[in-house]
Length: 299
Image (cartoon, rainbow, N blue to C red; front, side):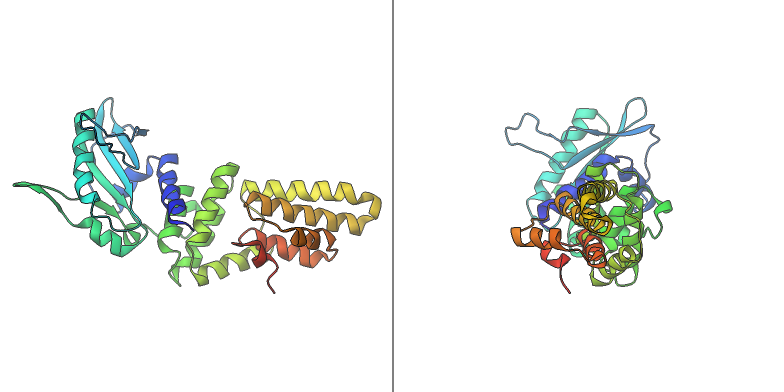
């Protein structure tokens, strides 16, 4: 996964569910929060009179009739010395805008970056900023979809997906949590989860899907069902077996298209020319998780 994709994906989790930030601050970081009635996303443009542009990743405002806490959320994939100068500016700017307490919440998928981000930032004599940091160790392990909302389940998979013991559990919980989401969010969350997993978790996920798993994400259901229906309709004149094979072939092509995996002319010809149903079903199962089209056909 490209770093920018992971960066934007993590921001999307908190943008889709602003409540996630204060919940984790309270439960995982044990930060005392003021009473509030709502958490909502605000403009992340923090530029004031200074001509230099200051733009945070996300700003979440807690309100109780009036602003009570402004959270500047920053996704950090690597250390960046410049942030130790801009983060204090973010806090000061957002505090002046909403006239309430403010803080920086750093979200990172790696502990070395978390350790770096936790270090107090000296602003000047008698003043410093201590960022709040959500690293992998602070993110709870979600081992069942009923334990949390999809965003927390996905964040848990990103944080713990490389662990050989917890990785398989959080991967399956995150996958099952996608049921009922719209196609765009389902696809984004699935890619975030799968791309964050280690070998053990990926194997568990693939075995789970190959063992008769019902496609839970809306995008998989949609493209598999549509492809099968169209293929069977086209294949009626050729006989029942041929029609079913055509349906599975079209389902496979739709899943590959939905996941934006390129298909060469030779690969398309191989798919459409295949009449072996077990092979087509195996390819469909792989296509839901494969990183490349070549991986679908690997033996």
